Amino acid sequence: MSSPDHKDWLVIEALQRGIPLMDRPFAVLAEGIGMDEGEFIRRVGALKERGIIRRMGLRIAHREAGVRGNVMVVWRVPPGRVEEVGMLLAEQPSVTHCYERPTFDDLPYNLYSMVHAADPDAAAGEVRRLAELVGVSDYQMLHTVRELKKSTPIYRQPEE
Image (cartoon, rainbow, N blue to C red; front, top):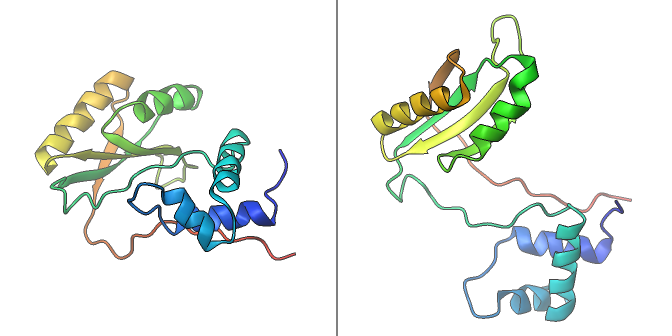
């Protein structure tokens, strides 16, 4: 896979600032970086085909939308089942993040997922359903005490 060129990075950086809600948002983004809309769209498609852009999607402020049952679930999964269990969890609509992590003596959990539901009781019920679905009974639910920072990562063109 070839690395993004300078113009690709302009497209990536423009997309990261957000897509405006309008009839032709890519025309506006393209104009902002001195590119025509057609080239901008072609570059987005090529970046996606090359796997550099994996997805583009909407992000909502879930608390403001009424989603109050949010919990990080750490799972202790046998090493030979991590990929299988991770894929099953990742397919569930209630799971927004799912990733493998190394274990430590005092933290033996190797699969982490973020589960969302209407309220904490619904989230706990959803976690029980997920545990039954994947056949893993060794897990812990880690509830947020306080949110200190929430932001989307911003990628910049590497210095030459």
